[in-house]
Image: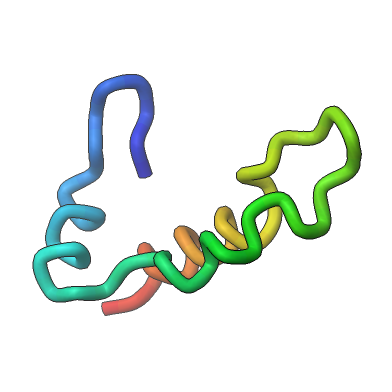
Length: 54
């Protein structure tokens, strides 16, 4: 996950291995309420799942 200008090494390693959250991006904002961040929901879940994977 990126925090400010830092990107966690696991994110870079997963990307190098071709594992990304690209599929979740098509759901970006799908279940968001007006005024709610579009990144909440499916994308956050996909990032969390990616970081938990070995």
